Length: 240
Image: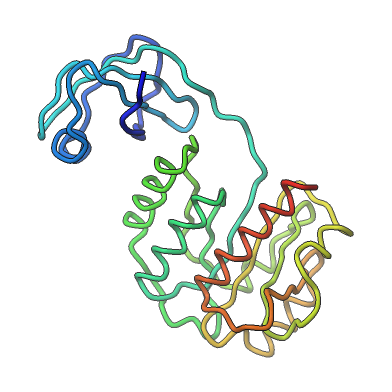
């Protein structure tokens, strides 16, 4: 049976559970997708995904019943993105695309050259949820409140390799680092516009399991560097 759309819900899902879908999603299902009674959508809750039949539908409220289990969440490689907050639209693009690729945790880092000190966390969580729905994943990534770089570097990350995207590095690549180093989890650290300061890069270089890497000869914007580095990391890990 064709599934018209995937929808994230907070409930603990189980077979034969009847649910009422909120007005925003009902409007999309009814007015945009033109779903009808008897058609199916998929509901997921960070743990499981279920084939769900539409019992009632209109632009304000829809009712569904869970018919059968489609899949359960399987733990995947933890990938953290440490990034300096940037302007609204680039930040939203970063969250959307990196979620689609497979980032599991987002940690904003405040640095000397960070231009934006705050953002709408609810908005970013909504974007991450939509990206998870679109990409066929089950677990929504976690987006933390910002911390400063010194706090990040003070934490013990012995079981994690952090790849530092640095304009100063010309040769070392992600694949070269991972050929020689393995860990339980992996992270990408991307600096602000204008890159890390001299003092920051010195502190980073003195931190164990932090490796400076190059993304090529061209200078990338922060959001582009984040998306590129995460995509390369995922590809390298998939072939390890």
